[in-house]
Image 1: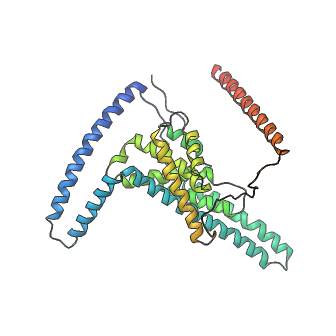
Image 2: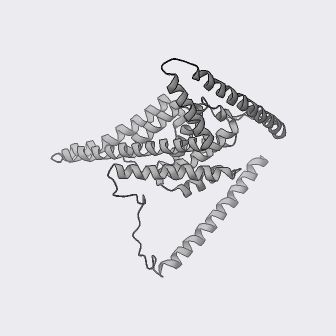
Image 3: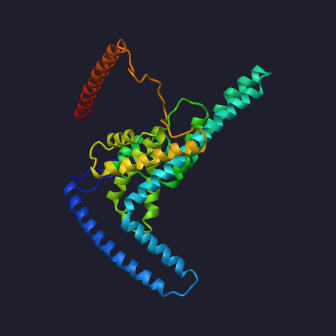
Length: 338
């Protein structure tokens, strides 16, 4: 059965059974190519050893270290370490820049304390300028960076190709636009856009690493790494790797491979750890602590009078969620009949 192309540049052109057979054949062919590549790689090392140039020893050492590292650690884990490290650096740099922008606004407001009108003008104009720059920059550089990016990631993880959503240009526009929007003081969160940022980072890293092994040219492997990137995006924002993995499962709810659990948890844990270490290095914290601290009593965190209220809130939320699902199902059924 053929399915026509969707409005969001996506397209399915084959039946699922035919696609699965062709995908299996393609994977077998890629394994054969990988074996041939490894043989040629060994031969290339042997040829380098006979080279008498000044850089031959450095090239031999680099190739041998790369081969040893990939054979012992595995390309997947190297990729996840690099992804977690890069996303932690991006998250910390954005938080630092946002804090500087908010501090600059307070500095401007405090420097005009003798004139109330200028204080009001500076307090209103500063965020308006940053928001306008953020919206204009994103619209000019990459309109695909608009919004949180989570619906687009759900679409991509289901096999639909969206053009220009995982490119370097969109990555730059998303990071700068989000930094300016949060630096203006607007009550926004960065966890949603960071899922899209982490996915773009994973896609760019996969293209970079494909130059070494060619294994990430496989589309199914790229989808798996994008699922792990969704966990990293949440993990590096809240320093909560378990929550990141659960969110990744929620995003890829139709199918989630068991092997992606450990990939997502490892990358999210590494990213959260580096994110908190950077806070200690910047002297924001004395040691590695939780991002959102609580001051509950250790003997009994809650009072007995609060427990019935919590139970009522849970029951009301459960009935509200069930009611939402019921009405959503009815609306979808009515739309399909029309």
